[in-house]
Image (cartoon, helix red, strand yellow):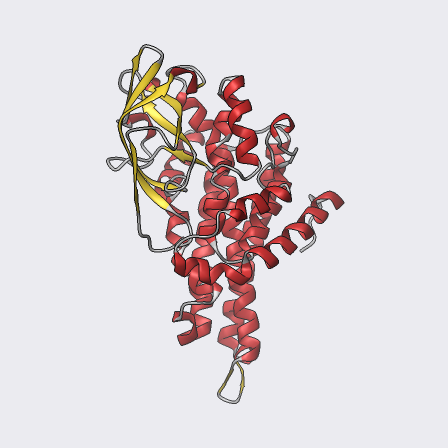
Length: 378
């Protein structure tokens, strides 16, 4: 669909992204999902087309990018219908912004060029076994010991957790509540760090782990920002993360729509193509309506962010809108496919398994509603 928000530069990047996805991801998506991982060289290939550097400082290998360039990247990646690949390939988009924003210059210069070149993998580690989105009450502790912090605790559901070379970890350096939270950069080969691979409903190609920190000694220079300022930095990350998720979910919904339409035109029942049955046409229109509405809201919010606004309530609602659209379209697509939709190998089946992780990750649907209501003064 034509949109007034995209320039010739956006369109050119879209074409490059589309060729990359069609060549490097789509043909292998099912194979990688079944294998539970994708080849590490994919990071370097993504870096070569500028995907990994989007929005990061040029001095470290980044590329200037507005909100719409990021939408293009997320939505073209989604065309492969492989959320697990997208999640791990782009885990640096939530793991590295705090480094770029608040780490010491020498740490930024050491870490970011490697990550943006696809040589190293970056991940964000906040969630703990005893609490999900309750960041202010996390319990992983880092005590100061001379020139180091000594870290003990656990993180779980960490995307790229098994392979990450750099972990941006939320720790408690002070007392209770948000004021006691700090961020540390912990390197993947730190003694005392161990990892346990997790099996999941969806995102099979994405490595997801529980991280165990047993008296890990981390240089104090790896502190990101000031002590006690971690909660603020984490919150700054959320708008971008939720916008990225909303863009992807809307695109996954469109993938389900496109795949369902193509199948309905080919499949014949009761002597005519499936698409000629009124009930199927109505399903398709309902799907298309929800996708168009979600995309319109997404682009308007992107425009507002470009104007310097911070529409937190609307972004929370957008995240819910997009995940609900994805859930609806994935369900309807599988229903249109019938028995074939229950078989592994088609995009709609894979996306159907990935619905819930999007509705939970980055803040659950319930938390999004509560945060939006508070922002609205309710």
